Image (cartoon, one colour):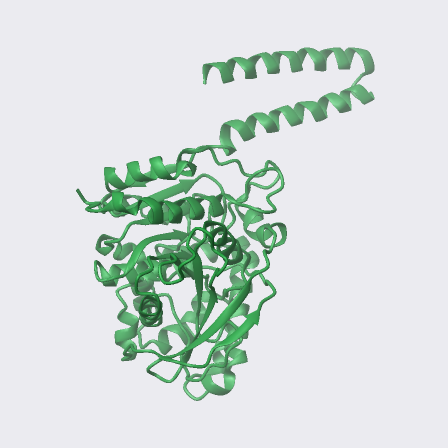
Length: 452
Protein backbone atom coordinates (compact mmCIF):
# COMPACT_ATOMS: atom_id res chain seq x y z
CA UNK A 1 0.00 0.00 0.00
CA UNK A 2 2.94 2.34 0.78
CA UNK A 3 4.34 1.73 -2.71
CA UNK A 4 0.95 2.48 -4.28
CA UNK A 5 0.64 5.75 -2.32
CA UNK A 6 4.17 6.76 -3.34
CA UNK A 7 3.46 6.02 -7.01
CA UNK A 8 0.22 8.05 -6.90
CA UNK A 9 2.06 10.96 -5.27
CA UNK A 10 4.81 10.97 -7.90
CA UNK A 11 2.25 10.62 -10.71
CA UNK A 12 0.18 13.52 -9.36
CA UNK A 13 3.26 15.73 -9.03
CA UNK A 14 4.40 14.99 -12.58
CA UNK A 15 0.89 15.67 -13.90
CA UNK A 16 0.81 19.05 -12.13
CA UNK A 17 4.13 20.08 -13.67
CA UNK A 18 2.94 18.98 -17.10
CA UNK A 19 -0.30 20.97 -16.80
CA UNK A 20 1.62 24.11 -15.74
CA UNK A 21 3.93 23.81 -18.73
CA UNK A 22 0.99 23.31 -21.12
CA UNK A 23 -0.79 26.38 -19.78
CA UNK A 24 2.33 28.55 -20.19
CA UNK A 25 2.94 27.32 -23.70
CA UNK A 26 -0.51 27.26 -25.28
CA UNK A 27 -3.01 28.87 -22.91
CA UNK A 28 -6.20 27.26 -21.72
CA UNK A 29 -7.63 27.16 -25.21
CA UNK A 30 -4.57 25.52 -26.74
CA UNK A 31 -4.65 21.96 -27.94
CA UNK A 32 -2.01 21.05 -25.38
CA UNK A 33 -4.32 21.96 -22.52
CA UNK A 34 -7.11 19.84 -23.98
CA UNK A 35 -4.75 16.89 -24.14
CA UNK A 36 -3.54 17.61 -20.63
CA UNK A 37 -7.08 17.74 -19.26
CA UNK A 38 -7.94 14.47 -20.98
CA UNK A 39 -4.78 12.92 -19.59
CA UNK A 40 -5.56 14.28 -16.15
CA UNK A 41 -9.07 12.86 -16.21
CA UNK A 42 -7.73 9.50 -17.37
CA UNK A 43 -5.19 9.38 -14.56
CA UNK A 44 -7.78 10.38 -11.98
CA UNK A 45 -10.21 7.73 -13.27
CA UNK A 46 -7.48 5.09 -13.22
CA UNK A 47 -6.59 6.00 -9.64
CA UNK A 48 -10.24 5.76 -8.62
CA UNK A 49 -10.64 2.39 -10.35
CA UNK A 50 -7.59 0.83 -8.72
CA UNK A 51 -8.39 2.15 -5.25
CA UNK A 52 -12.19 1.94 -5.12
CA UNK A 53 -13.49 -0.43 -7.82
CA UNK A 54 -11.05 -3.32 -8.22
CA UNK A 55 -11.12 -5.08 -4.85
CA UNK A 56 -10.93 -8.54 -3.35
CA UNK A 57 -14.30 -10.00 -2.37
CA UNK A 58 -15.33 -10.47 1.23
CA UNK A 59 -15.56 -14.13 2.26
CA UNK A 60 -17.74 -14.95 5.27
CA UNK A 61 -18.37 -18.43 6.64
CA UNK A 62 -19.94 -19.92 9.73
CA UNK A 63 -17.19 -22.52 10.09
CA UNK A 64 -13.42 -22.60 9.76
CA UNK A 65 -13.46 -25.91 7.87
CA UNK A 66 -15.61 -24.63 5.01
CA UNK A 67 -13.69 -21.35 4.96
CA UNK A 68 -10.33 -23.09 4.58
CA UNK A 69 -11.78 -25.52 2.01
CA UNK A 70 -12.83 -22.62 -0.20
CA UNK A 71 -9.50 -20.81 0.12
CA UNK A 72 -7.60 -23.95 -0.77
CA UNK A 73 -9.79 -25.30 -3.57
CA UNK A 74 -11.40 -22.15 -5.00
CA UNK A 75 -8.70 -19.51 -5.47
CA UNK A 76 -11.23 -17.17 -7.06
CA UNK A 77 -12.60 -16.35 -3.57
CA UNK A 78 -9.34 -14.62 -2.62
CA UNK A 79 -8.53 -12.98 -5.97
CA UNK A 80 -9.21 -9.35 -6.81
CA UNK A 81 -12.35 -8.91 -8.89
CA UNK A 82 -11.65 -6.59 -11.85
CA UNK A 83 -14.89 -5.32 -13.42
CA UNK A 84 -14.51 -3.73 -16.88
CA UNK A 85 -13.13 -0.23 -16.27
CA UNK A 86 -15.86 1.12 -18.53
CA UNK A 87 -18.68 -1.01 -17.10
CA UNK A 88 -18.59 -1.48 -13.34
CA UNK A 89 -21.75 0.31 -12.20
CA UNK A 90 -24.48 -2.03 -10.91
CA UNK A 91 -27.31 -1.17 -13.28
CA UNK A 92 -25.04 -0.99 -16.31
CA UNK A 93 -23.64 -4.47 -15.59
CA UNK A 94 -27.13 -5.87 -15.06
CA UNK A 95 -28.49 -4.41 -18.28
CA UNK A 96 -25.49 -5.10 -20.54
CA UNK A 97 -24.59 -8.65 -19.62
CA UNK A 98 -27.18 -10.27 -21.94
CA UNK A 99 -25.77 -8.31 -24.86
CA UNK A 100 -22.05 -8.62 -24.07
CA UNK A 101 -21.60 -12.26 -23.15
CA UNK A 102 -21.41 -14.97 -25.79
CA UNK A 103 -24.18 -17.54 -26.06
CA UNK A 104 -22.61 -21.02 -26.27
CA UNK A 105 -24.53 -23.42 -28.48
CA UNK A 106 -26.11 -26.24 -26.48
CA UNK A 107 -28.29 -29.11 -27.67
CA UNK A 108 -30.67 -30.26 -24.94
CA UNK A 109 -32.67 -33.44 -24.49
CA UNK A 110 -36.08 -32.45 -23.18
CA UNK A 111 -38.00 -34.52 -20.66
CA UNK A 112 -41.49 -33.79 -19.35
CA UNK A 113 -42.43 -34.98 -15.86
CA UNK A 114 -46.07 -35.32 -14.84
CA UNK A 115 -46.83 -33.86 -11.40
CA UNK A 116 -49.43 -35.30 -8.97
CA UNK A 117 -51.82 -32.40 -9.64
CA UNK A 118 -51.84 -33.21 -13.36
CA UNK A 119 -49.36 -30.51 -14.36
CA UNK A 120 -46.10 -31.04 -16.20
CA UNK A 121 -42.53 -29.91 -15.56
CA UNK A 122 -39.95 -29.50 -18.31
CA UNK A 123 -36.37 -30.67 -17.77
CA UNK A 124 -33.63 -29.94 -20.29
CA UNK A 125 -30.75 -32.40 -20.10
CA UNK A 126 -27.22 -31.96 -21.39
CA UNK A 127 -25.94 -35.53 -21.07
CA UNK A 128 -22.31 -34.87 -22.10
CA UNK A 129 -21.88 -38.32 -23.59
CA UNK A 130 -18.47 -37.27 -24.94
CA UNK A 131 -17.08 -36.79 -21.43
CA UNK A 132 -13.52 -38.14 -21.22
CA UNK A 133 -13.07 -37.67 -17.49
CA UNK A 134 -16.37 -39.41 -16.64
CA UNK A 135 -17.20 -41.81 -19.50
CA UNK A 136 -19.56 -43.91 -17.36
CA UNK A 137 -22.93 -42.17 -17.47
CA UNK A 138 -24.12 -43.93 -14.32
CA UNK A 139 -21.48 -42.20 -12.19
CA UNK A 140 -21.03 -39.00 -14.18
CA UNK A 141 -21.49 -35.99 -11.82
CA UNK A 142 -24.78 -34.18 -12.38
CA UNK A 143 -25.36 -30.46 -11.89
CA UNK A 144 -28.95 -29.30 -11.48
CA UNK A 145 -29.40 -25.73 -12.73
CA UNK A 146 -32.23 -23.42 -11.63
CA UNK A 147 -32.75 -20.23 -13.68
CA UNK A 148 -34.23 -16.99 -12.34
CA UNK A 149 -37.79 -15.67 -12.11
CA UNK A 150 -38.90 -16.04 -15.73
CA UNK A 151 -35.73 -17.74 -16.95
CA UNK A 152 -35.27 -20.98 -18.88
CA UNK A 153 -32.44 -23.18 -20.14
CA UNK A 154 -31.88 -20.57 -22.86
CA UNK A 155 -30.56 -17.87 -20.51
CA UNK A 156 -26.95 -16.85 -21.16
CA UNK A 157 -25.81 -17.50 -17.59
CA UNK A 158 -27.32 -21.01 -17.76
CA UNK A 159 -25.60 -21.72 -21.08
CA UNK A 160 -22.29 -20.57 -19.57
CA UNK A 161 -22.74 -22.99 -16.64
CA UNK A 162 -23.50 -25.81 -19.06
CA UNK A 163 -20.35 -24.91 -20.99
CA UNK A 164 -18.24 -24.94 -17.82
CA UNK A 165 -19.74 -28.29 -16.80
CA UNK A 166 -19.12 -29.73 -20.26
CA UNK A 167 -15.43 -28.87 -20.02
CA UNK A 168 -15.24 -30.58 -16.62
CA UNK A 169 -16.94 -33.68 -17.98
CA UNK A 170 -20.15 -33.29 -15.96
CA UNK A 171 -23.80 -33.71 -16.93
CA UNK A 172 -26.35 -30.89 -16.51
CA UNK A 173 -30.11 -30.78 -16.14
CA UNK A 174 -32.05 -27.51 -16.18
CA UNK A 175 -35.24 -27.26 -14.14
CA UNK A 176 -37.68 -24.98 -15.99
CA UNK A 177 -40.51 -23.59 -13.89
CA UNK A 178 -43.99 -24.52 -15.05
CA UNK A 179 -45.18 -22.88 -18.22
CA UNK A 180 -42.08 -20.77 -18.98
CA UNK A 181 -40.18 -22.85 -21.55
CA UNK A 182 -42.85 -23.31 -24.20
CA UNK A 183 -44.67 -26.32 -22.77
CA UNK A 184 -48.41 -26.17 -22.23
CA UNK A 185 -49.71 -25.35 -18.77
CA UNK A 186 -52.07 -28.21 -17.98
CA UNK A 187 -53.38 -27.03 -14.59
CA UNK A 188 -54.09 -23.56 -13.14
CA UNK A 189 -50.86 -23.53 -11.19
CA UNK A 190 -47.50 -21.91 -11.97
CA UNK A 191 -44.72 -21.40 -9.39
CA UNK A 192 -43.48 -19.15 -6.61
CA UNK A 193 -40.30 -18.60 -4.61
CA UNK A 194 -41.67 -20.21 -1.44
CA UNK A 195 -42.91 -23.41 -3.07
CA UNK A 196 -40.36 -26.22 -3.35
CA UNK A 197 -42.67 -29.12 -4.17
CA UNK A 198 -41.75 -29.22 -7.87
CA UNK A 199 -38.07 -28.85 -7.02
CA UNK A 200 -38.20 -31.73 -4.54
CA UNK A 201 -39.87 -33.90 -7.16
CA UNK A 202 -37.23 -33.02 -9.75
CA UNK A 203 -34.32 -33.73 -7.40
CA UNK A 204 -35.85 -37.08 -6.46
CA UNK A 205 -36.34 -37.91 -10.14
CA UNK A 206 -32.75 -37.01 -11.05
CA UNK A 207 -31.44 -39.07 -8.14
CA UNK A 208 -33.58 -42.06 -9.11
CA UNK A 209 -32.41 -41.80 -12.71
CA UNK A 210 -28.71 -41.78 -11.75
CA UNK A 211 -28.58 -43.15 -8.19
CA UNK A 212 -24.79 -43.59 -8.11
CA UNK A 213 -23.90 -40.19 -9.57
CA UNK A 214 -23.11 -37.27 -7.25
CA UNK A 215 -25.59 -34.40 -7.62
CA UNK A 216 -24.92 -30.71 -7.08
CA UNK A 217 -27.15 -27.72 -7.67
CA UNK A 218 -26.72 -24.13 -8.77
CA UNK A 219 -29.47 -21.53 -8.52
CA UNK A 220 -29.64 -18.03 -9.92
CA UNK A 221 -31.73 -15.24 -8.38
CA UNK A 222 -35.17 -16.73 -7.60
CA UNK A 223 -33.79 -20.15 -8.55
CA UNK A 224 -31.14 -19.70 -5.88
CA UNK A 225 -33.36 -18.74 -3.01
CA UNK A 226 -36.00 -21.39 -3.49
CA UNK A 227 -33.51 -23.95 -2.22
CA UNK A 228 -33.89 -22.71 1.35
CA UNK A 229 -37.72 -22.78 1.71
CA UNK A 230 -39.80 -24.38 4.44
CA UNK A 231 -42.21 -25.29 1.66
CA UNK A 232 -45.15 -23.75 3.45
CA UNK A 233 -46.52 -22.80 0.05
CA UNK A 234 -46.97 -26.47 -0.75
CA UNK A 235 -48.81 -26.95 2.51
CA UNK A 236 -51.03 -23.93 1.80
CA UNK A 237 -51.90 -25.32 -1.62
CA UNK A 238 -52.45 -28.85 -0.31
CA UNK A 239 -50.04 -30.47 -2.79
CA UNK A 240 -48.31 -33.85 -2.68
CA UNK A 241 -45.27 -35.15 -4.54
CA UNK A 242 -44.66 -38.10 -6.80
CA UNK A 243 -43.83 -37.79 -10.51
CA UNK A 244 -44.82 -39.75 -13.56
CA UNK A 245 -42.85 -39.53 -16.78
CA UNK A 246 -44.14 -38.23 -20.08
CA UNK A 247 -42.61 -39.05 -23.49
CA UNK A 248 -39.23 -37.43 -24.15
CA UNK A 249 -38.49 -34.95 -26.89
CA UNK A 250 -35.20 -33.58 -28.20
CA UNK A 251 -34.83 -29.89 -28.92
CA UNK A 252 -32.04 -27.56 -29.98
CA UNK A 253 -32.48 -24.16 -28.38
CA UNK A 254 -31.40 -20.72 -29.50
CA UNK A 255 -30.52 -18.52 -26.55
CA UNK A 256 -32.72 -15.73 -25.28
CA UNK A 257 -31.47 -13.74 -22.26
CA UNK A 258 -33.72 -12.15 -19.69
CA UNK A 259 -32.79 -10.43 -16.44
CA UNK A 260 -34.51 -12.05 -13.45
CA UNK A 261 -35.18 -11.46 -9.75
CA UNK A 262 -35.82 -13.32 -6.51
CA UNK A 263 -35.57 -16.94 -5.22
CA UNK A 264 -35.87 -20.95 -4.95
CA UNK A 265 -32.86 -23.30 -4.07
CA UNK A 266 -31.96 -22.06 -0.57
CA UNK A 267 -35.54 -22.54 0.61
CA UNK A 268 -35.40 -26.23 -0.33
CA UNK A 269 -32.32 -26.84 1.82
CA UNK A 270 -33.93 -25.10 4.76
CA UNK A 271 -36.79 -27.57 4.61
CA UNK A 272 -34.86 -30.77 3.93
CA UNK A 273 -31.87 -30.35 6.26
CA UNK A 274 -29.83 -33.57 6.08
CA UNK A 275 -32.53 -35.35 4.07
CA UNK A 276 -31.23 -34.37 0.64
CA UNK A 277 -29.07 -36.11 -1.93
CA UNK A 278 -27.32 -32.88 -2.95
CA UNK A 279 -23.58 -32.84 -2.24
CA UNK A 280 -23.15 -29.09 -2.58
CA UNK A 281 -25.01 -25.97 -3.66
CA UNK A 282 -23.95 -22.61 -5.09
CA UNK A 283 -26.37 -19.70 -5.48
CA UNK A 284 -25.92 -16.40 -7.30
CA UNK A 285 -27.58 -13.02 -6.71
CA UNK A 286 -30.15 -14.50 -4.35
CA UNK A 287 -32.83 -12.24 -2.89
CA UNK A 288 -32.54 -13.05 0.81
CA UNK A 289 -35.24 -10.77 2.21
CA UNK A 290 -38.14 -10.33 -0.20
CA UNK A 291 -39.50 -7.31 1.69
CA UNK A 292 -36.23 -5.40 1.31
CA UNK A 293 -35.64 -6.61 -2.24
CA UNK A 294 -39.10 -5.51 -3.35
CA UNK A 295 -38.74 -2.13 -1.64
CA UNK A 296 -35.41 -1.58 -3.40
CA UNK A 297 -36.95 -2.26 -6.81
CA UNK A 298 -39.72 0.23 -6.10
CA UNK A 299 -37.34 3.19 -6.00
CA UNK A 300 -38.09 5.46 -8.99
CA UNK A 301 -35.07 4.66 -11.17
CA UNK A 302 -35.09 0.92 -10.48
CA UNK A 303 -38.83 0.74 -10.94
CA UNK A 304 -38.39 2.33 -14.35
CA UNK A 305 -35.42 0.15 -15.39
CA UNK A 306 -36.36 -3.22 -13.93
CA UNK A 307 -39.62 -3.50 -11.98
CA UNK A 308 -42.00 -2.58 -14.77
CA UNK A 309 -40.21 -4.80 -17.26
CA UNK A 310 -40.23 -7.84 -14.99
CA UNK A 311 -43.89 -7.28 -14.20
CA UNK A 312 -44.67 -7.26 -17.91
CA UNK A 313 -42.72 -10.52 -18.33
CA UNK A 314 -44.79 -12.15 -15.61
CA UNK A 315 -47.99 -10.84 -17.15
CA UNK A 316 -46.95 -12.12 -20.56
CA UNK A 317 -46.55 -15.60 -19.08
CA UNK A 318 -50.00 -15.35 -17.49
CA UNK A 319 -51.54 -14.14 -20.74
CA UNK A 320 -49.94 -17.02 -22.64
CA UNK A 321 -51.76 -19.49 -20.37
CA UNK A 322 -54.90 -17.44 -19.88
CA UNK A 323 -57.38 -20.14 -20.99
CA UNK A 324 -56.25 -22.36 -18.10
CA UNK A 325 -55.67 -19.70 -15.45
CA UNK A 326 -58.82 -17.63 -15.89
CA UNK A 327 -60.91 -20.48 -14.50
CA UNK A 328 -59.57 -19.64 -11.04
CA UNK A 329 -58.25 -16.06 -11.17
CA UNK A 330 -59.28 -12.57 -12.27
CA UNK A 331 -56.76 -12.28 -15.10
CA UNK A 332 -57.98 -8.82 -16.15
CA UNK A 333 -57.13 -7.56 -12.67
CA UNK A 334 -53.73 -9.28 -12.79
CA UNK A 335 -52.92 -7.69 -16.15
CA UNK A 336 -53.42 -4.22 -14.64
CA UNK A 337 -50.61 -4.69 -12.10
CA UNK A 338 -47.87 -2.08 -12.42
CA UNK A 339 -45.25 -3.62 -10.11
CA UNK A 340 -44.08 -7.04 -8.97
CA UNK A 341 -45.69 -6.43 -5.58
CA UNK A 342 -49.05 -5.74 -7.18
CA UNK A 343 -48.68 -8.84 -9.36
CA UNK A 344 -47.94 -10.98 -6.29
CA UNK A 345 -50.86 -9.50 -4.38
CA UNK A 346 -53.30 -10.23 -7.20
CA UNK A 347 -51.93 -13.55 -8.43
CA UNK A 348 -49.03 -15.39 -6.76
CA UNK A 349 -50.06 -15.14 -3.10
CA UNK A 350 -53.64 -16.10 -3.98
CA UNK A 351 -52.58 -19.08 -6.09
CA UNK A 352 -50.61 -20.60 -3.23
CA UNK A 353 -53.21 -19.92 -0.55
CA UNK A 354 -51.56 -17.20 1.54
CA UNK A 355 -53.88 -15.02 3.67
CA UNK A 356 -51.90 -11.91 2.69
CA UNK A 357 -49.05 -11.00 0.40
CA UNK A 358 -46.89 -10.25 3.45
CA UNK A 359 -47.37 -13.85 4.57
CA UNK A 360 -46.13 -14.99 1.19
CA UNK A 361 -43.13 -12.65 1.23
CA UNK A 362 -42.05 -13.83 4.67
CA UNK A 363 -42.34 -17.47 3.65
CA UNK A 364 -40.40 -16.78 0.45
CA UNK A 365 -37.49 -15.07 2.26
CA UNK A 366 -34.62 -17.54 2.76
CA UNK A 367 -33.02 -15.39 5.45
CA UNK A 368 -35.39 -16.95 7.99
CA UNK A 369 -34.37 -20.53 7.14
CA UNK A 370 -30.59 -20.36 6.76
CA UNK A 371 -30.00 -21.93 10.16
CA UNK A 372 -31.56 -25.17 8.89
CA UNK A 373 -29.24 -25.65 5.89
CA UNK A 374 -27.16 -28.82 6.35
CA UNK A 375 -25.39 -28.99 2.96
CA UNK A 376 -22.29 -26.95 1.97
CA UNK A 377 -23.67 -23.87 0.23
CA UNK A 378 -21.66 -21.03 -1.29
CA UNK A 379 -23.54 -17.79 -2.00
CA UNK A 380 -22.27 -15.04 -4.32
CA UNK A 381 -23.79 -11.56 -4.01
CA UNK A 382 -22.71 -8.11 -5.17
CA UNK A 383 -22.90 -5.31 -2.63
CA UNK A 384 -24.28 -2.97 -5.31
CA UNK A 385 -27.08 -5.30 -6.48
CA UNK A 386 -30.31 -3.25 -6.53
CA UNK A 387 -32.35 -6.47 -6.66
CA UNK A 388 -30.79 -7.74 -3.43
CA UNK A 389 -29.38 -4.66 -1.67
CA UNK A 390 -26.35 -4.81 0.56
CA UNK A 391 -28.30 -4.25 3.77
CA UNK A 392 -30.40 -7.35 2.98
CA UNK A 393 -27.42 -9.73 2.62
CA UNK A 394 -27.53 -12.08 5.66
CA UNK A 395 -23.95 -11.81 6.87
CA UNK A 396 -24.73 -12.45 10.53
CA UNK A 397 -27.05 -15.39 9.76
CA UNK A 398 -24.35 -17.02 7.63
CA UNK A 399 -21.87 -16.72 10.50
CA UNK A 400 -24.16 -18.91 12.63
CA UNK A 401 -24.11 -21.94 10.29
CA UNK A 402 -20.88 -23.84 9.48
CA UNK A 403 -22.43 -25.16 6.25
CA UNK A 404 -22.71 -21.68 4.73
CA UNK A 405 -20.27 -19.34 3.04
CA UNK A 406 -21.00 -15.93 1.59
CA UNK A 407 -18.85 -14.25 -1.06
CA UNK A 408 -19.56 -10.53 -1.49
CA UNK A 409 -18.03 -8.42 -4.26
CA UNK A 410 -18.14 -4.63 -4.19
CA UNK A 411 -19.50 -4.54 -7.73
CA UNK A 412 -21.20 -6.93 -10.12
CA UNK A 413 -24.85 -5.90 -10.14
CA UNK A 414 -27.56 -8.55 -10.48
CA UNK A 415 -26.27 -11.64 -12.30
CA UNK A 416 -23.66 -9.38 -13.89
CA UNK A 417 -20.16 -10.02 -12.53
CA UNK A 418 -18.56 -8.96 -15.82
CA UNK A 419 -14.76 -8.82 -15.65
CA UNK A 420 -11.82 -7.97 -17.85
CA UNK A 421 -11.61 -5.50 -20.71
CA UNK A 422 -14.17 -7.20 -22.96
CA UNK A 423 -16.19 -9.79 -20.98
CA UNK A 424 -17.30 -11.92 -23.88
CA UNK A 425 -16.64 -15.53 -22.91
CA UNK A 426 -16.36 -15.72 -19.14
CA UNK A 427 -17.45 -13.84 -16.04
CA UNK A 428 -16.45 -13.84 -12.39
CA UNK A 429 -19.64 -15.78 -11.66
CA UNK A 430 -18.63 -18.46 -14.17
CA UNK A 431 -15.29 -18.93 -12.44
CA UNK A 432 -16.90 -19.22 -9.01
CA UNK A 433 -19.33 -21.82 -10.37
CA UNK A 434 -16.64 -23.89 -12.09
CA UNK A 435 -14.18 -23.92 -9.20
CA UNK A 436 -16.79 -24.72 -6.56
CA UNK A 437 -18.51 -27.64 -8.32
CA UNK A 438 -15.12 -29.08 -9.27
CA UNK A 439 -13.95 -28.78 -5.66
CA UNK A 440 -17.05 -30.55 -4.35
CA UNK A 441 -16.72 -33.39 -6.89
CA UNK A 442 -12.98 -33.93 -6.49
CA UNK A 443 -12.40 -32.98 -2.86
CA UNK A 444 -15.84 -33.12 -1.30
CA UNK A 445 -14.68 -35.70 1.23
CA UNK A 446 -12.84 -32.87 2.97
CA UNK A 447 -16.24 -31.41 3.88
CA UNK A 448 -17.28 -34.46 5.88
CA UNK A 449 -18.36 -33.40 9.36
CA UNK A 450 -18.12 -29.81 8.23
CA UNK A 451 -19.53 -28.58 11.53
CA UNK A 452 -16.53 -29.91 13.44
